[in-house]
Image (tube, rainbow, N blue to C red):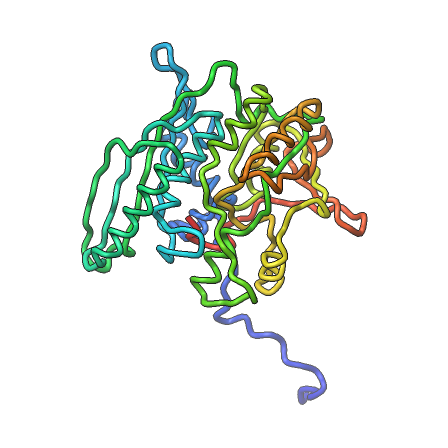
Length: 358
């Protein structure tokens, strides 16, 4: 029997590949560094069992512990962003602000940082000098001291210009207990300003895409903003800076840690027009795009007005807004109420939308 020419041939799947990395992939893939489910599984199933101890067990942005009479926060972060320079900052600014902000999410004021440079053979000294100057400027702005450091050089082709690691330590004020497990039903979710800016700024430079206006990274130290919030409310329940994986991933991590549901109101999300247009063009969701100068705060409803006013009085919180609440329903899950009255689940991404944004 001859084939019917009106019937299309079946699709040929030879050579097709899965667009998402396999969860049981035997090798490290870029998705393991994207801040999504693959990152979480790598940490939970590989690193945590190897390093298991009570201090690490909290899996917060910074470890909090006592040393003598002092309550300290300690954190470390590595920075591999490309390009090295972008509108609003550079890898040098990120290296300071990223660690300062991780400490601030425990309520700590960063005091001292270490700084390690990994340099690829052949990188221009002028580039390294510019990054070092930016790093020093960012440290002075954040009020933190670069107390120690290290430099290594790797063979040409075995790096990507410049990588930086910073670690930091700071004091946690008496009476402060900020951690994801403290989020509770009835709490209010606040974001300190417009979201998705950093990720789009990086993408615009990396890919040479113009969105009609220059998108400038929000990279900034948040320790001053947190101090202003603590001045009006020592009982902040949870703080998180939504970097890799964006607001969505951070809230999912909090919801799972605290065993609560989170309900957002889509119309209240502060997404700037340039970011919304870029995300629409690129097929991205602003909730998953990285930030480097924003924080999420979860506070008791009775404290929300005072905290929000303190945030709006600070330059880095002028656009702060209440975007949702914690609820008893659907524990461990984040949902958004859309403008059409529907509800959609906001899950943790498997891999990354925008790789190497910090």
